[in-house]
Amino acid sequence: MTETEITSSEPTDAPQLPENVDLLRVGNREFYLVGTAHVSKSSADLVERVIEDLRPDCVALELCRSRAEALRDPSRWRETDLFQVIRSGKAYVLMAQLILASYQKRLADELDIKPGEEMRRALSVAAKLQIPTTDVDRDVKVTLRRAWAKAKLIALLRLLYTGLVSFVEGTAAKISEREIEDLKKSSELARIMEQFGKTFPGVKEILIDERDRYLATKILDSPGDRIVAVVGAAHVPGIKLFFGQRADLAELEVVPPAPIAFKILLYAIPLAIVSMLLYGFATLNAPATAEMLGKWVLVSGSIASLGAIIATAHPLTVLSAFICAPLVVVRAGWVCGLIEAFLRKPRVADFETIGDDVTTFRGFRANRVTKVLLVMALSNLGALIGRIAGGAFLATFLR
Image 1 (tube, rainbow, N blue to C red):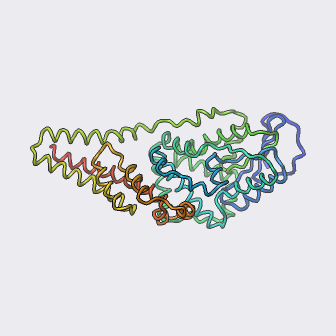
Image 2 (tube, rainbow, N blue to C red):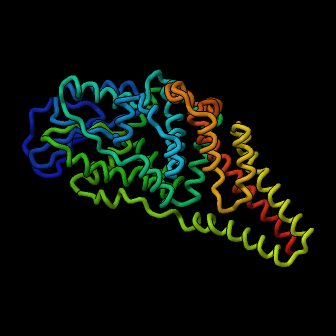
Image 3 (cartoon, rainbow, N blue to C red):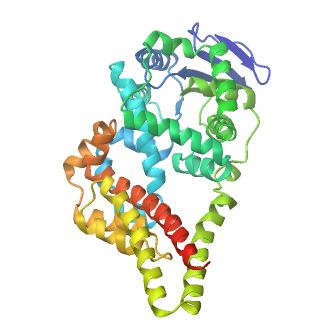
């Protein structure tokens, strides 16, 4: 056990604490940080033992409201309104969550444990002992959107590529529970965090450092004089570093605007294409104008349709991709996602099996919930590539 006194205090009669449990004191208040691995049986057992031994006034969990509700009620997936998710622009955030969850699920399956079992165990033991719990993590949607908006593009692309390769191949790193326990040691964690920061500059700041400050503040604000906080081991060093220093939570919850490069790409391509089309209409004769327009529709529409076909979308959705892509002011992927959701409405079974289906690309494509997200993403990607390729063809007419 490592003990850090934020302010001076008299020692208590707390029992001897095991490894991976740190005690922080602020005045007469005690905060026990339980560092866990989210796919470790030992961590789940440790959480249960610490709560039962200490009988704290409150148990603080590294969960946001949506993740806590998902643990408390796994059937809440059935209430997901895909139309609203797509219309509100949160589809990619949901897709990113599912891809991250798929990796954790595969790793947990290898170790014969449910992902987040330590949090379930904490909730169960706290309920049995009638100890209140509080969720102290930042909303996962805010974290992902801040990472997208603030991190360097090259780091995000590298992280996305790493995740997609693992997801499509359907494999997770082979690792034993003993190796996972070793990862919770401070020296190994420091090495991993340093390497993560070098490989994904900016991403670590959002996913780890900011959340360390957020968690430290929320844990400090938890009610009671004796608090047990269940957090991922990677956050323990940062929480200890920032503990007692109140962060501006409102500032950490603000979603900044999208990167300027993304905005330029979003508007520059349609503007360039519309400009070329207008210039062609004004300068070319009728046959050349018709040929130019025909090739634009054929190239941009065909490549967008290919994206929908790869996602095994409904034929009408594929047709919609072909029609929408040449209309540069229309977000083809969003339209295709809405049409796919209407034509192939998710069934109750799709929501019940989504946890297992997301572990493979085949399952992701077969489940009607995730299929809608995949259709939307690949149609959008196809439309973007198609418009760029189609724009190149337009340029040949204007020489």
